Length: 246
Image (cartoon, rainbow, N blue to C red; front, side, top):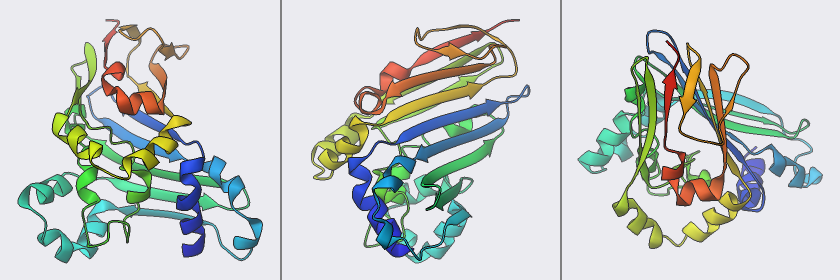
């Protein structure tokens, strides 16, 4: 299986992926957040001889478990980095790889009492990449280049009358990326990939400040799709406000 994972992450830069940000909000403001990466298109590129005897996997694990296993490495990180990791403990991850069905899915999810709890969750993923001496070793997030991190601080708010999604550019993070030799490699992945937003609300949407948004028949679900490379370069383009019917 390690051989297959190596092949997957070796060819991921040559294939397209779909990233989906999914949020369900209940009437009391609580809900569930999921971020999925579908890299199934890359499975068709793996030589059949290399996976002949490999078994499919469907594994679920938590960040809390991963951090416990790496507690020695984490204790050596700066205090600020440790605090960022602490915010990720409530997240769970799932990896599903079915070789015969040519399916490769990777996702992370968490429940929340208020959508504001999700503030900065994605930017904190970068702290996870610093765990251990070898960033690639034992770190399922590293091959994805941060799994959707786009050098911005993402904030959400919901009060029953209005929902706001706002990304604020992190200029310090951009400077770091400009000096990152891996940045160009990641751009190869982003060029043919897409980012999809699907938000589900307890009441119908009256209006949204994004002209490309699509609605479900009951107007309780909003979908916005964007080229991933543009999303990475201009995260503020996916800022919008939603107003609901009374």
